[in-house]
Length: 226
Image (tube, one colour):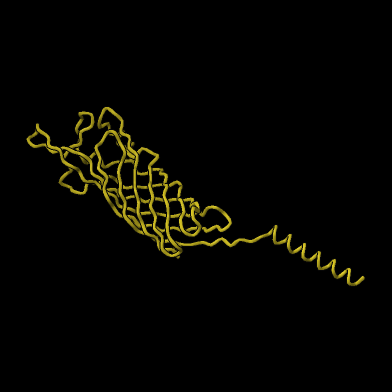
């Protein structure tokens, strides 16, 4: 009888422990931190202006929640960049004749991002997607001597300096991929602006048509993770 009770106790204990582990399996979520830097290629997609994309630099910092039992990780981060762009302008030769000249502008951006990192190949490749909120400075002329040059939109020339006052708060979407091991990673990212970056220019009545332009940015960066 005692032996039977002992066997029942052992069987009950095994079943209880098995059920407990099956129902209350624990996962450790690891938090990581990353610092990065790289290069950008920036443009504004618009029908009103003739633009040429330019290169710039970017630095970033982010924190990541590594969730082992999910098909994705989540990160929150900030990116700071200085970007360059050329816009076709005109220089007055004799007050009547105009000569075409490329105007060189730069714009500083600060972006807050929440990205979803889909685990395409575990611990090696992730596909990254998510929204960004952006604050950017004005579209500044790099050469003060170009301030008196002109931009022609719909046969309505205006001073090149008038283009500087663009919209400074924008909403973007980012998509890309990250490759690498735990400590060093390489990331390629495309950032598209959902909002009209040139909308503020419409308040100045520079032309008869409305300005519309969306940001387009390519980012290539390296990340060191901790």
